[in-house]
Amino acid sequence: MQSYWKVKLSIFLNYFVFAILLNSVGTVILQVQHTYGVSETSASILEAFKDLSIAGVSFLIASYINRLGYKNAMLVALGFNALVCLLMPSIHSFGMTKVVFAVAGAGFALIKVSVYGTIGLVTADKKEHISLMNFIESFFMVGILAGYFIFSGFIDESAPTAWLNVYYVLGSIALIAFVLLLTTPLDESSLKIDAAKPFLEDFADMFRLVILPLVLVFVICAFTYVLIEQSIMSWLPTFNNKVLHLPNALSIQMASLLAIATAVGRFLAGVLLKKLNWLFVLIGCLAISAALVVIALPLAQNAATSGVTGWGNAPLAAFIFPMIGLFLAPIYPAINSLILSSLPVNKHGLMSGLIVIFSALGGTTGSLITGYVFEHYGGQTAFYFSLIPIGLLIVVLILFSRLQGKNVTLEINSVGGH
Image (cartoon, rainbow, N blue to C red):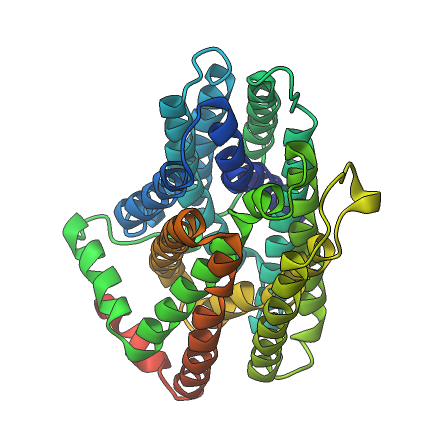
């Protein structure tokens, strides 16, 4: 029997690496405005390079992941990202920044589909599945948190390009993760499929999944949630800098409160969702999130922000608004686990691909809309926008719950004829 603890450790480290890379987009959006003189709307395109590469690679790989193997896919992702990170400081430009996020997005597509599939190999039942999913996603937030402080440690107002040296650190972490995974055994024998099956038929299987009512409503949930999350996470450093008028490094550091709140929220959810009805928990969390938006943004408008130099004299709004992460946190891993645990293990790769594709499209949409509204109507209006998808998500979650309660297992199992 393989040592599942080492598999889980490898999964955590892989997620940690890509948490820093991908979610540095908010920090980098702020930095490229200062380093390369680009506008908010232009800077928002970095989210598209990240998310569209995630969506594109997920579409191509999801139906092929069982053939390639989860471990091989993760090794490819780590290797390419290590290389690009180590090259970034020497050939930097706004164009190279786009390349970094495109490669990170492609790598994350391989990592996430593989990790979500691997969870099904190392857990025994639905409760263990949803618990491990939440703990892994909470560790992802720990990586995001670490990223804020790692990046801010390299920012020097007198040296506009000093922050680029952080990529030497990120490349080194990716290499360590590569070596650990290379030496980690993973039994993927349960994924064996008919080698004679036409490749295009695998794509057809993925589309047969998405037209099922339960899966269709789920992908709307995933799209809407990530739209909310990324519209806030990617633009919080810029909000802190341009609305609350905090210094660059402090703007990035205080954005880490969102990651802390989200990590704590997902950790607690890993415990609470074993005991409480998931729908009541998630709707309650969304209602509180909407209330925080309504409370925090007026505080930001009236905040006295002159002379802010550190955490000690930062305005109250900089502390309150990031607490939205505590309540948004349980939603994404919970709905992902609910849909995955409804499927047989050999369908997890296909479903994981759909999760990543629609999550990426939601992230791009949220960031582009927020960037446009931020530039033309101001940061407060941009963040008030989140109330619309929060309301929509409540409605869609109720519908998802009703469909999830029905007996759809046989219909899902019939996809692809096996």
